[in-house]
Amino acid sequence: MTVSVADVVAELERRYDPRWAEPWDAVGLVCGDPSAPVERVHLAVDPVLAVAEEAIAAGAQLLVTHHPLFLGGTTSVAANTAKGRVVHRLVTAGVALYVAHTNADVADPGVSDALATALGLRDVAPLDPRPGEATDKLVTFVPAADVDRVLDALTAAGAGTIGDYTRCAFMVEGTGTFRPEPGAQPAIGAVGEVSRVAEVRLEVVLPRGRRSEVLRALGEVHPYDEPAYDVIELALPPSSRGLGRIGDLAASMTLAELTAHVARALPATPVGVRTAGDPDRVVRRIAVCGGSGGDLASAAARGGADVLVTADLKHHATSEAVADTGVALIDAGHWATEWPWLGQLADALADTVAGTTVSTLVTDPWTVHRQKEL
Image (cartoon, rainbow, N blue to C red; front, side):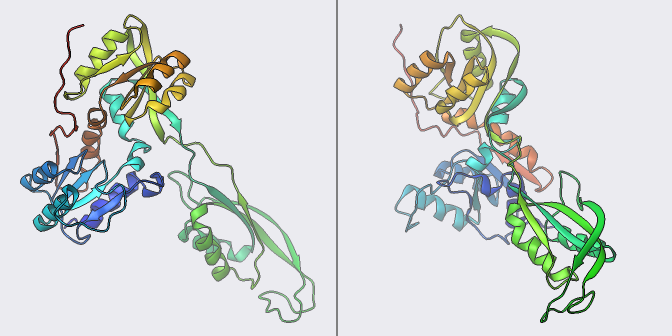
């Protein structure tokens, strides 16, 4: 079976729902024909020209990156800018570009799960959990003979799914009563007469985003011209998604040993790994956040973490976080802390496309690091 760009995008968005992205983010298909066939996908952190050339050389028809090409708005993709040249090179070579950014950061599994795995953390949980999908409960009352037909229609419209189960409902028998007034067109009873009907109270849950479709289906299939129903907005449930992860090392080690462990576990870059905190401190509970996660130090402290491993740490904020929270901070570089996700993504796409390649090109913007001896 031929796999298209749209097929791969559908699998990506099943795992990394674009609705999970931050409002300022720019995720999704950037360029390319959704109907174009795909045999190979190339995966990378940054959509820079060298990566585009790498994707073309690998024979890919789709390039998937973590970082957006156009995070801000643009009015031109002319090839007289770095970003424009990327677009032109990909389009002329027949390679589509797709971005999964903050929606991949909070996914389960997501970017920080891959980082936690690379560091060997156990019993991992979200550091900054996100609530689950907003849900409603629909309560309606249906003549007993019509319950199955109504439930089937509500299910088809998106209601009644709980985890891996569909057509989930609660039903209890009772008696409904009503008197049709002039102008009504009752399916049961007559205008002006009180009717008593054996009815079933039917309850189903539904994603709040499907409310309109479910109510439309109810109106179309219910035998009454004016079906009675209640819509109850439920409290947001917990979820396994969230920003960052927190877990435990298999064995305690000093902060200096952990710094060396992080350096060994992640790909080498000129940035290297730097640590803020007492090198001799013994640590075991570790928080991680791929990319820029310095503002999660307080969340790490609330979770009982000894250390937060992330990137892009700033001087004053780092000094204050260590002093105020007691959490040590390790800056392992933005690109290096996000790169492990590419292997996770390759595994996730294994059943969708014939082949994937993972970029090993270091695209961290820092290219030289020198340190005077202390």
